[in-house]
Image 1: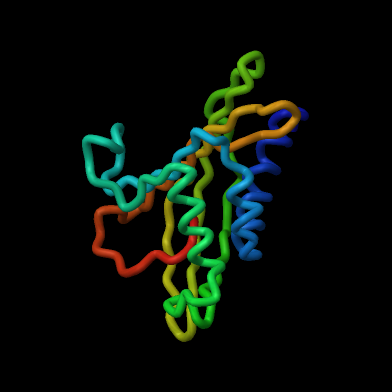
Image 2: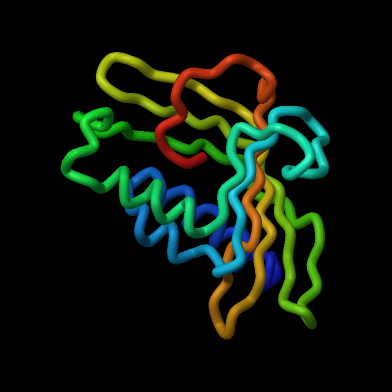
Length: 159
């Protein structure tokens, strides 16, 4: 792997590990200030503002969700939910090193568990990354579930 491709791949893998370890504050720090986290309902959905989505959150809403997850009075998270990501090797879809913009797509299986309930999700994560100094930041993370148009219960954590 070339240096930049390895760095991009490791970024995506490290992000999943941070989530699996429940380090949500560290995870939030991976996002740029203008970031979005988007989980469309329909495959191929192109506009989160003109169509319904399972989630479409800016950094402020992500911060509120992270604060809620870490709160002592979040009774719906007692005991806390846990998660595990199983990722294929991320594929670089586009790369503009001069502008510091990169797009990767990663197939995944994601398990979320709390008490005796375990839920499996499968799909693809697309990361739009930007270089900010010597760091990479997530400008957009899009989660396309295989069955995104299904009826879901509560999705507690982040995929």
